[in-house]
Image (cartoon, rainbow, N blue to C red; front, top):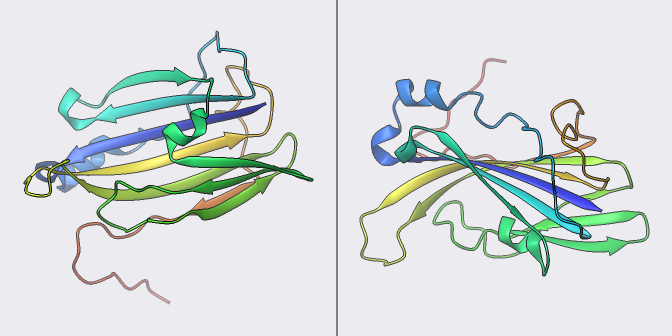
Length: 173
């Protein structure tokens, strides 16, 4: 069984300041899975904390036909486990128009994918912009409520970028 937990934290352009950033801190921590999950080879626990709702969590559980694609993932069985790819086609920045291999998970392993994006409304003439920070955990393991909060990932892919433009910060050597 493959279990995916995608936590998205969403904010608008007017919530880019330091005070709002402090409110978002910690929202992407691993959450307990719902007690009752559907049977199936793949289950997705999709969690959203949106600035427009005061960062109140809303949750959906998906299974059935290709639920991984609802989290912008593609899974493929390989000899040693499950290979995980990502493709986020709706993002304006960074452009992510083709699949990117994240990791291969052996049975029992957990992978962590971190990314952030800038999105624009459906109409190209729309002035509506928003940002999302994604924390996606993928387990090649049976589902149980405490699967993610107490286990460190064995594979990590961090694709976060600077979203607001400007010069990149230099770190001290």
